Length: 145
Image (cartoon, rainbow, N blue to C red; front, top):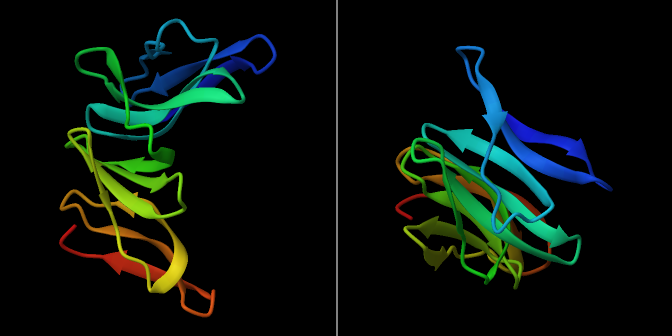
């Protein structure tokens, strides 16, 4: 499991709890005061590392190497990661995206202006929500991402 520990006004640390009862803080990006992990799979976790609520970065942790790296700045959110370190994300423009090895692949919508990918399988099949041309939201699955 992942999440964060601490108090928002005093600083938070991304944190992991493992099945063997071990647990611990994840490395921070440049000692930024706020960080939290959103999802974990295998040796990878995704989340954010912020200076404050307005200035932050989305990040990918490699738990095996105890490292953290910044994800591309065109992303607004990350929701899921698989054991290959690929992430389901949302862009600043409101589009769903898949991030692999630092490269962002924007996923198509159902004709509307926005979409979000919430889950990601080991085979890079993403699922989430997309608006159609009329602005109605629909559950979607992206295959062959």
